[in-house]
Length: 409
Image 1 (cartoon, rainbow, N blue to C red):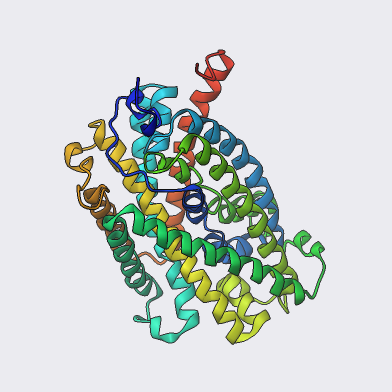
Image 2 (image 1 turned 135 degrees about the horizontal axis):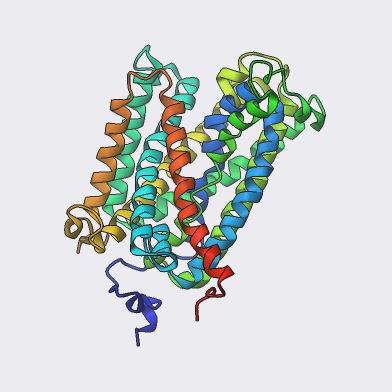
């Protein structure tokens, strides 16, 4: 029988190597910072609006309904299997080693691509705060410079140890949540039109072969980009206190809070902007609306909060990537698995995966520096691979449930 302190880890064939230091709020913060309401909504609002007009807002509740089904499944799995590299270990127990290998590689690749994608969000926000952050006249080159600085920071923090990561992450999430609520209030005070604005399409489907339906499908990528990553709360299961109890709650709370707060920000922004037909909305996005509605001083303060949100979001995304790399390396499902699964006796964290994930993420940015569509290309790849990895968990789980083999004893 395994010791109670390891939450049954020995029952899965592993020994406790990572340090259990994360409490209830730390676990919740990990999930919500990966989703990161302010990062996702501010990063791709321009994309959703330009392709679908104000009516693209309806993709937000639609994506939430689908993701809530996934989150409920993940919450159930987190209670049974509180192990690092959640998606990988869950698919291993629901499907087969082959399915787990594919899911793990898919999720690991998507997570590292997501590190690069989130880092690009600096470019959409920092230059609007100050021209100091415009190091190059080429926006793609400037995005790579800013993104590389962010990845270097998150790599150092993650390599230093989970305690420092958790403290920075929790503080950032606290600031993000307060800023998000204040932003909702500030936008609500300045509304100029009713909620019927979300019925306007701005004729965005005119050039689409499927009409507005086609335009809406493309625009919905903006919402699908935000609402994933809640499984991070479980991926830190080997470093959390009482993960069987805390992780399932954190998964659901992170998704629901993000849906409510993010949905209100998007809706009220559309209701508050002075001219809903202003072409700058499709290029400047939410950043433009915030500065337009609240003015440069107050607007800049909120944009600073967005920068903090982007920073902790990237921190959480890389943390999840590290745990996935550690979990797969431990099972020799990655090259040089022994080195990837080594936990530093000093920092109590896998240092090599932190460095490897950071270096690969920077290389992804550099390789795409000549791409004018760098933002769309990288984020789209990240979205598609994450959702495919999720399917490799939910489909085997459904099969087991239909066969009466779930839940396990």
